Image (cartoon, rainbow, N blue to C red; front, side, top):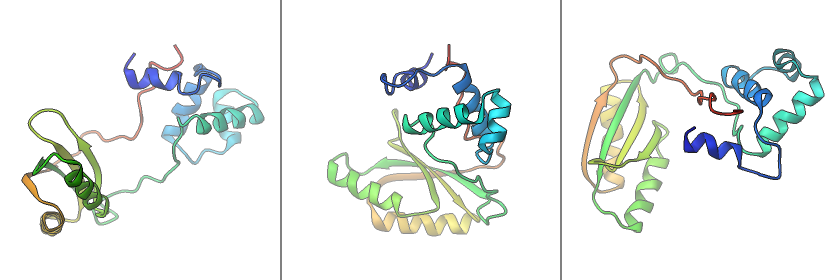
Length: 171
């Protein structure tokens, strides 16, 4: 079991642990967050009230963070996915605060990850085309000093999901 999955079991020891019913609830909600309590309770074979209580507990424990609509990026005019690889110009708290503020201000940047290895950060951006990426790049380097920036444009999305693997939960 991975550390992250193990962490879910013991987030709040005062509340019940994750069991197979919770895993089924989470699995169904990851696929369709619009399910009504009635539909969800039928799928996991619980009464409506028991299902509602479990969903509320999962929300209170932080396992369910949000319920969102996943948009089609192409239809929304942001069909080009870009991975941006960044080497920091500095490694002090002031630079990091400025970097966090800068990347947080750009709606086109949909993911920011501090990484180990040769690169310091990997950003994921959604833009309409290469020209839109260049405009994003120009705005980013105007906001924060970077030692090196490179980008890779996604040619084909073979798999993309928001679902967290739940196989280790409930065991």
